[in-house]
Figure 1: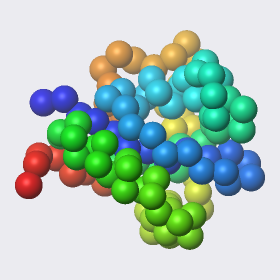
Figure 2: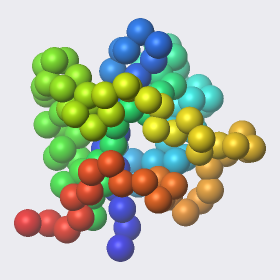
Figure 3: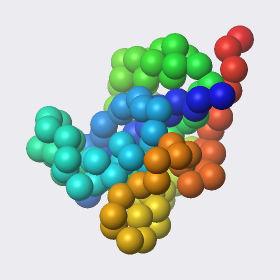
Length: 118
């Protein structure tokens, strides 16, 4: 079964970015190395602070839209509940800096998992 991820990334000033992907390691690498044009490159979004996994892409997209609709305070509360220090969850994922594996897993980590549709 394929896994989809909703993630929140930030920068040193705690600007927030929420996204969805089927390969979290690759997408975080792209953001960290400014390989994608747009908001994340412009605002130096380079720290993964939260993610959830889903077994259905529709659930992941729905959750991304839900989080994007929240006020900042609610997003911060979500992050703090799971990651109080705002630690970069992906800080040790790329030891060789050559990029992520193609397997799409989040290095075996599961911050929150919502597999399967209700």
